[in-house]
Length: 240
Image (cartoon, rainbow, N blue to C red):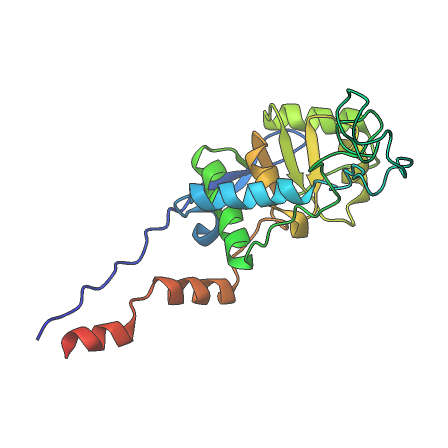
């Protein structure tokens, strides 16, 4: 009796990140990043498709050109059909006339692409795993702003030794954090619910607090296990 090969479970890499004090940059502990979120093998194809769809959804799609039926004038024939020595024309609204309509011009449309939720989640996990593999994930214990101050935000980035474009994930109720970092052009602030693959990929570093670190939900883990498990019906068919 033949036995169907059993697929091995994918290997998840566990990344341990130092937790730092944003005021001094000193180590206050360490945390293991969720391997289901930060330790998978990045799927480049899915990331490309999701990012392309996300950029396409940003397009307004308000471009509009008038066709020959929408421009003014041209109600009568400009000259008689024969005898003038000129080309025959029936209307000055034709595309070849100045002030006429545009042939096959752009019209208002939606550029949105349908992207399954599983692909969006996989693209985000792939992007975060790529940043974790390159040691570009920074974790702080908590922010310590007594009042909104851009100078303190710049000092915190220097203490954390974060350079380039920074994606900073903060809770919406952390008003002092948002007001302190919002004037820095190299920092992009988002809430945990807005975290997406595009913003992660265009940033050089991603900064989390312990409270905003993304964790995999039991439902996501079960769905992934179901997708990766061998088909029992197929195995029974091979055994028979």
